[in-house]
Length: 119
Length: 114
Image 1 (cartoon, each protein chain N blue to C red):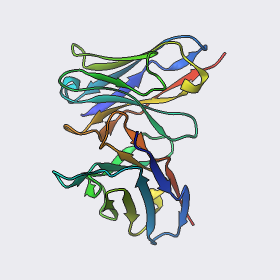
Image 2: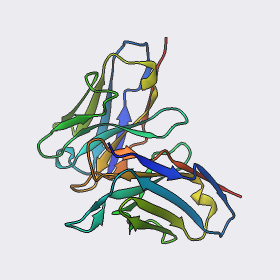
Image 3: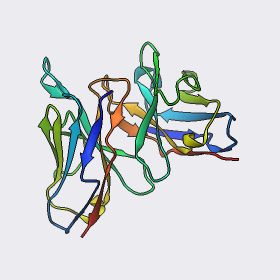
C-alpha cells in the first residue's frame, strides 16, 4: 500500500529542537520530490520545505530558513525534518506530502503529526 | 512570490445545488509552451489531511467524483461542485505550482450545508 506515516511530534519549549520523521511505503522517496507542509490550529496550509527527487536539492520557506533542515534516508525510505530554535508560531500539524511525478502538486499526504511549542 | 486569493472565505449551499469557489493568482499560472495552468485544488475534511481533487486546473484526480470540476486559465480559476452532497462539507484550497519555491496556497474556503 502506498502511504506516508509521520511521527516525532510533541510538546517542546521555545528554543528547543524536535526531529520529525515520515516513513514511506509503496514507492521510493528518492524518485519523487518530498515536502513538509504545516497547518497551524484553525489556519490554512503553509508549505515548509522540499527535497527534490533526483538531485536531493532542498528548499525552505523564509519562515523556517536557517532553523529547519530536511533530509532523507534511502536505507529505510524515510523523510526527516530537523527543527531547531523552535518558536510558538511553529505550533502546527506537520504533514509530509509527495509530489506527483515531476510536478509540484501533492498526490499523497500523511495524516500529520502535531508539534506544540510552549513553555 | 505568487499570492493566491480565494473567494468567498465561506459558503453555504443546499444539498443538490451547485457550489462555486474562486481562486485568483497574483500572476499568470499558464505555461504557454505546454498550454497548461499550474494550479491544483484540494479538499480537507475535519481531522483529515488534504486530498488532491484537481490538477492542471481542470484534470480530475483518479477516483474523484465527476461532480467536481475545475476551470479557468491565467489568473482566474474556479472549482465547481455540480450537485452538493453531504460528504462534500470541507475546506477547499487552491495551490499554484507555476513558480516554485515557494509553493503557495489560497487561504481556504469553508463549504457548509445550508
